[in-house]
Length: 279
Image (cartoon, rainbow, N blue to C red; front, side):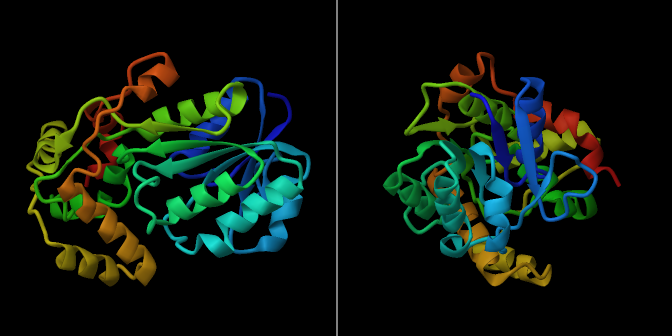
């Protein structure tokens, strides 16, 4: 593929590695940032400011699209960006979706997938499993300050996938032909229960990390006390409760096939980022 790739979420867990990976291949990555100062290749972009869409897309031939957790209303944000990309002549759109978006129509990712399917673009869905990076992001405060893994997952298991692997796969989908109008499921290589995850953290950090198995209400109330938006609290709680019913336990062989190597393990991620949970 030739041309410029507009990368949304370019400072996040996946997007920043997509930028790095594209540039390592000699491709032009254009990070879309609310504040582009400091990166000569970056452009002003904000999902909530449609007036930034056309300038950010100008001259682009591909788009890496993801949904930031704080954005739930995709009909006013991501879907209009898709329309603007098609109008600007963007051919290839790789959307970082989630596993189960094809069956759970109530989640925001499903609406984006449906919108892309109705359009003429060469879309590709990378349906991610449960992020290893949740440990260093959404769960970081609880682990670091309270020595607990506080999620309402019960006895559910998750095949944790490393965002770095997702980024490597996305770069291949953006750079190579043969992936148009296809969906790929991307999971880690092993499904772990959260008690097992707490044990991995305990071993790496040298102190006991507990898994108290909170209920959905306790979890949602804790998120609200942290002043997260109501819709984000609802979506995040539903996604975690879904873990109890096996929504993230599938181990799929697709990711290693895309990467041409084994996927990173959760233990690998924890060792690489242990400083996140040190006091």
